[in-house]
Image (cartoon, helix red, strand yellow):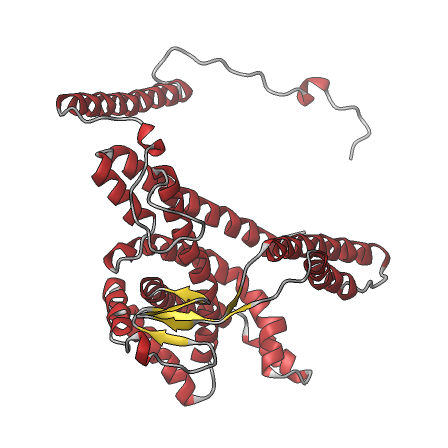
Amino acid sequence: MSDTAADPRLLRAPPKRGIRLSWADERLRAIVWQVLVLGIVGGIVWWLVGNTRHNLEVRRIATGWDFLSREAGLPIAEHVISYSPTNTYARALLIGVLNTLKVAVVGIILATLIGTLVGIARLSKNWLLSRLAAAYIELIRDVPLLLQLLFWYTLLQALPSPRQALHPLTGVFLSNRGLRLPWIEWQDAHSFALLGLVLGAVIAFFYARSARAKQMADGQPRKVWPVALGLIVGLPVLIWLAYGAPFTGDIPALRGFNYAGGMAVTPEYFALLLGLVTYTAAFIAEIVRAGIQAVAKGQWEAAEALGLSRGLIMRKIVLPQALRVIIPPMTSQYLNLTKNSSLAVAIGYQDIVSIANTTLNQTGQAIEGIAIIMLVYLTISLSISLFMNWYNARIALVER
């Protein structure tokens, strides 16, 4: 490099050129087109709003959200929180949202577990296991989901009556009224213990991250499991003991024409969950299979050369690398499962779609009812997408 000083004029940034009032200026053209498109979209929205308001006034259809505070008079058979027909429409719609979330959350967890196992079985060296997994995938994916829901619901309705209920285990009864399982009499101590479990898990997670960061800094390993065990197990148990350690079993028993007590799983919820899980798991299985096959064969060969078992290779080496391929399409399946839960109305499960439809039929608030359904599914879908995108960014390879 020359020792001569560089000309200061060469180090200056080029002067900014102003926008010329000429169609030849590309920046002016870009602004004009953007303003034009924005104006057209705004005009369409203004026309739609005005046309809707005019039609509502002509037909004397009331609008607004005052109906949410009125008494619903709507019976809901299955609800997570307390509800009676004397409650408001707002609470009835909240029950619908919670019922939708109950299906979506449990369905996503079960579909992920079953789909992962079937996807791994599809690649098994056992000929029979591999063919059974392939048959399951092809059969389930080729049958419409609505037909599968109707099939499961019809099958559950064909079960014996409660007096002749199937009794595979102590306290477990399966009949055409649903599934009854033993449970405990839930009290405040159990609620606070559950809250302590969640809080302990969160603290343990951040403690584990801090321990790993310190180990990376000084090279000294730190035991995480004693602290995690104390937070996740010890903290809830202490809270439970502090509130008197209540534990009373609630065993189902036949009362008249149905079972009382225990935990009840209605046929509608059971059929919906079975249909959504088996259907979505078939697609997840193919995603898992493709992700595993995307890992280079040399990874298997190198791990086998070290004497590692196939199960250990799969858990510690292959699956962590396959996740980078699996997560993006898996997000779409989670969204599909959540949106497909709206088919619950076909088998009588009262989710947000069913309750909102009944509400708009009773009140005539069609626009508000449809808007609530759209808002609920949009919120759930965006939440799933944000979480999965965050997780995908955490496991992505970072170039240095």
